[in-house]
Image 1 (cartoon, rainbow, N blue to C red):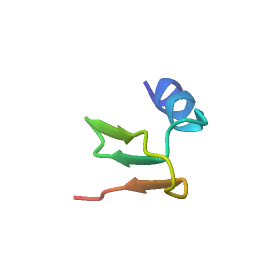
Image 2 (spheres, rainbow, N blue to C red):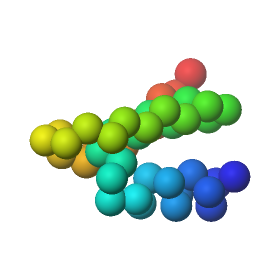
Image 3 (cartoon, rainbow, N blue to C red):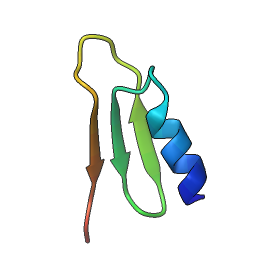
Image 4 (cartoon, rainbow, N blue to C red):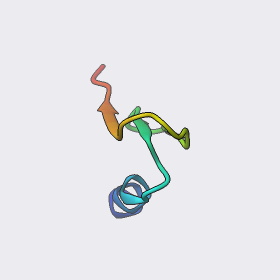
Length: 41
């Protein structure tokens, strides 16, 4: 799944991603700089 997640966040249409370890959230919004967040519990 790590490889799948890395491929998803490399997509040029993904602007913001949030990695919650067991769950990931991605946003496809124009005008926002590309950012990736990994939350630590």
